[in-house]
Image (cartoon, rainbow, N blue to C red; front, side, top):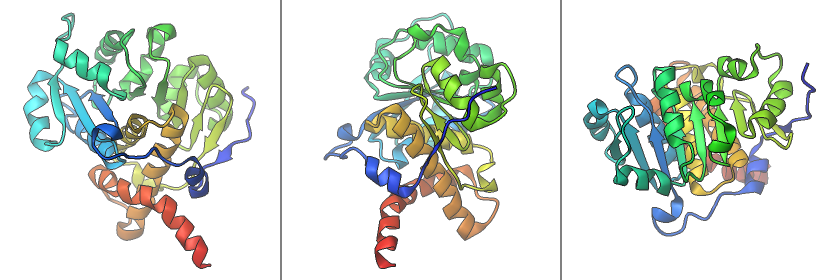
Length: 288
């Protein structure tokens, strides 16, 4: 049985205290994200994740996906630089390697529909010079197949309950109790639904979002938001907390206007307003 830590509640006041990096004067100063994933079954996942990274303030986004999907992604996501994924067993070309290693944060997983494919990608990324790696979806389930010391020092795991259960080797009893131990074991920041945990034992608890977040593509938007904040220069725990809070806040904003039934693409478009709401909350307090 895991010991339950006392969580820190995530509030606008907490996020204001942490702040965000100065955006500077160009897209280069706001950081670069690389999103790796996609499949014929879920081509749009990399688009949703990449857009979310831009919507929280990252300056540039690259997408790496299967060669058969690149033209679709280029049309759907004209803001991205789109790379053809290397074929299994073949080396990456120099241009892709430079873009991957030059990114401030790399997201692996959105839209991948096969565990073996995700494992191949994780092995390909092992020992590369990646500043921060974010894992999502199938990439989470195969994390233990690669030695931890071969992966980047800064690692964020964005998991659902089933994926946390796979990593734990048992069903989740209590997120607040279970995640800190898992985070220490993986030496990674772990986010799942209403909790973010760090290897230090710190754990943050989130609220809000509602049932509307349970929609296709919502997790891709969440993973992209976390990656975007990491690309901007936030350290991994704060990137995960900022991303999770803004995703939840975007859901609350849409629920207030539309009720149930909003789409993941609308979540991504709501993220800039969610970021602004951190300071808007301060303005509301000053009027009381």
